Length: 374
Ligand code: SF4
Ligand code: SF4
Image (cartoon, rainbow, N blue to C red; front, side, top):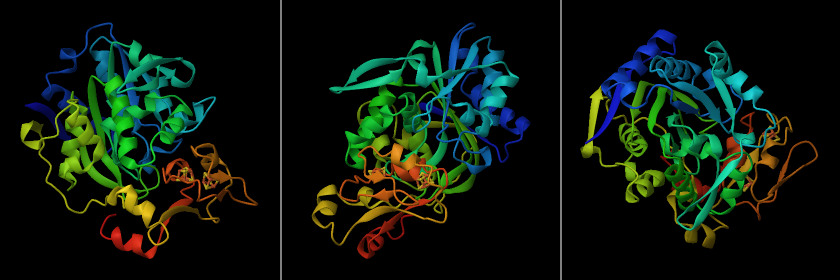
């Protein structure tokens, strides 16, 4: 049976989070049963954008702090690193705004710059991927995702969080290889397989729901910390308690079929708190996830979705232009302009807009098909 430990935690107060993280680790046999004294341990949060902790876009610093304390207590050396979306010469703003930088300074923990550490080229399933070196050089990786919806893959947690080990704009390049959500999920799983974390600790205290996830959805109280050595099992179990068949999420299905972890709820042993299954979680409503691409392609005149910019919110920062993999966005008079003929609906522009200024506009028929989803 695959072990998942869960601890109730309804606030980000340091003591509450430390108690919950420690309980989860103890239930799994203690962190010392995973790591040895002197090991270099990379802690990989989700730092998608430079956003404040209360916006629920990034892993909360209190969770990172609790893990740093536990790693140090086990006699190992913690490091922290991530590569946000977009191209950034310095990530100082990201670490500062998310509060993770302050926690690292407090405990004298090195922040590793994934963008400037070089890459290893790794082959898997006939595809080559560039992965930042520190992730593969350290002795142990602790993946620390947050529970959020994701427009393209429906869900982002342990599996998708490892996509941030691909530095800078290479992430955008990989979007070009996949013109539908299932193909992109395969790429996400390839990267998870290459970087497979040794332990996963999930910030499930406040997650994000709705079509705007992972950056402009709605924060939702979930009230727990979860941990497991099996990231596929964690993602699958979380989907289950959020009212979704785990195998309806492509990253879970592909990872399970490749033998990267468990997705069968009956094969999981839940230690600690057993959360009830809820039916009020808002999943994203992306037409590309609900209909096969041959239907959306063949009926594009009547069934379509496209990103649109709210000019009242847009600051013309041009992040969306920089993050579009197919150059479907260009500078406009006051705000960027879309070339919808080029757009592959990857939703990167929505994900990377710091102002929540981009949303999905849908045709009447697309709205009808996606009704009840998000
Ligand atoms: S839509 Fe968002 S990302 Fe694009 S220019 Fe406006 S504020 Fe920036
Ligand atoms: S315009 Fe937005 S959704 Fe379309 S391809 Fe570019 S980033 Fe993706």
